[in-house]
Image (cartoon, rainbow, N blue to C red; front, side, top):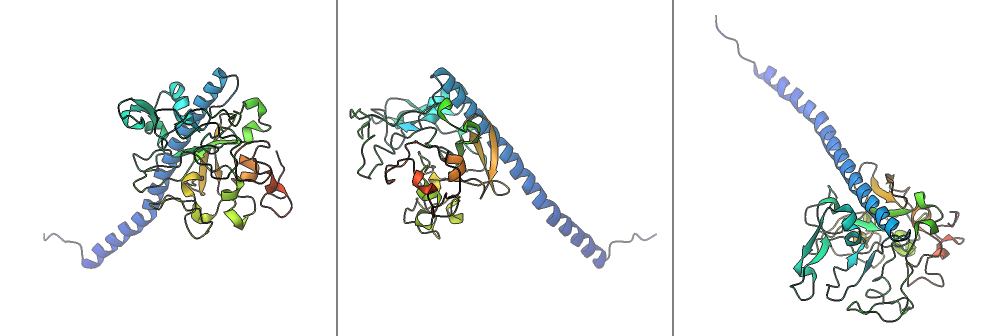
Length: 313
């Protein structure tokens, strides 16, 4: 008996069915993969948060500082909360001679393993940024401060003391709503030769609200939520990338960003819901040398401003 093969129409029908199934299933697989990365990223932040809490327990309730200069260490790689919590986390901190100014002394730098978000290309530093209201920045007031307000410029460019007081460190007990205050979050990264997120996350209201656009709730302009081969842009143009590498990055479905909060618990928050007004701000925090009158940017809660109507913590 002669064997019967498939007709052309039958083959086309089979191919069409396979194509339809692929079109249905591939997005599902992609979503599942992204969900797995979100879980891994949240785990990273949870462990980093636990490291910060252990540091706090050992230092009279105080969180580590975001960054400060050390004599003999490169300015572009200051000692940060990442290296400070390294002994507690024991993951992702290695010693490199190129971090030192002499090129011979090995110094610690957090740049791999737990410090790498699963959705960020390999070998990019500083995938996570810290809230200066919780972890104050030294360089915001010293090395990178061009405001003319040098009240808290406690270090010179080489990391030596100037005799001025630093911005005070922050304790858990000083935060009025510790479980609702952002501590560390996913942030954008510069994919050019910089291969890095910013050392310091923008924690004043100006850039969160889109500069002069004064976006209600200070929830970050859409185009500034990105990774880019362009360097940060500080012209306030909402159509450009803005200071993206020092702002939260909503990498996951929703879209949402993973956050570890100041009490150590980790939970994502959706874009539009994550607000400087409700999640970042702590009254009395020293985060913005450029701010008029009050360095915590409390003016943003006044009538007609971006945080008007929000409770001022």
